[in-house]
Length: 297
Ligand SMILES: [Zn+2]
Image (cartoon, rainbow, N blue to C red; front, side):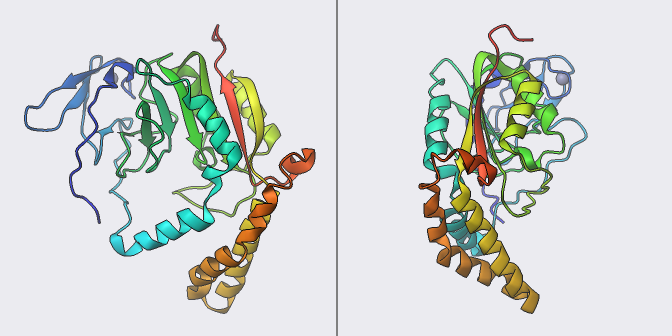
C-alpha cells in the first residue's frame, strides 16, 4: 500500500468551498508545522486532511482506506490505461475538453468530479470519492462541497454511470457552476460492467440530453466521445476473456490482455464512422457540453 505522505496542494481554493452538511463557507485552520485544514463557519465541523488533500465527505460517510494499487499491480494499471481504456484521449474528447477548460484563468476555479489521478489544469480541482495521489478533495457528487455559483467549469468523465442518483448529481453541478459556466459531461454507452465500486447505468445520446436539460442546463453540444469501432473492440475483448474464463477462471485477465492487443485495430474504424449520423446507435460513449443559463432557474 502506498501511504507515504505527500506535499499537499495549498488550500487556496477554500474561498469557493462550502460545508457538505450545512453549505456554510469554510475557514482555514492553520496548524503551524502540521497540515493546514478547515472548519465550517456555520456548524463548526472540523475537516481532516485526506491522503493528498482535504476530506469533505458529508457526515456519516466514512473515508475509505487508500486504495492506491500496490507496486506489484501497477504494471497492470499501466497496461489497462495505455491499451484498453483510451477513451479519454479520443480526438472528440480532447477537442471538447479543451473548449471547456478554456474557461479557466487565474481568477477562477473548475472542478473535475471523479478525477482519479488525472491532472488536466492547475485551476481544475480534483474531487473523488476515493483517495489517490492527485485527489484534492474527497467528497460525494450528490453533496458537492462548494458554494452556489462558484465555479467556471465542471468536468466529469466516465463517472455518472457509477452514481446511484445521476439526476441529483447533475442538479448539484448546476448549483455550483456560475451562470454561463460550462459542464463537460462524458459517459459510456457500450461497455462491459465495471464496478468502481458500483456500476448502475448506461446512457444513450437522448438520455444524456434528458438528464442535463431536466437538471436545468442548456445543451451546447452532444456527440459521440468514442465511436462504434471502440464498441466492437470492447465487446470482442470481453467476449474472448469470458470464453477463456469459462474454461478456467484464472484465464480471464491473461485472455483479456491478449485480446486487448490483438483486437486493437478494431478501434481505428472509429475514424471511418466519425461523421456518419447513425454512429449514435452504437457509439461506445457520449460527451456533452452544457451551460448553466445566465439567469439560473
Ligand atoms: Zn457546516
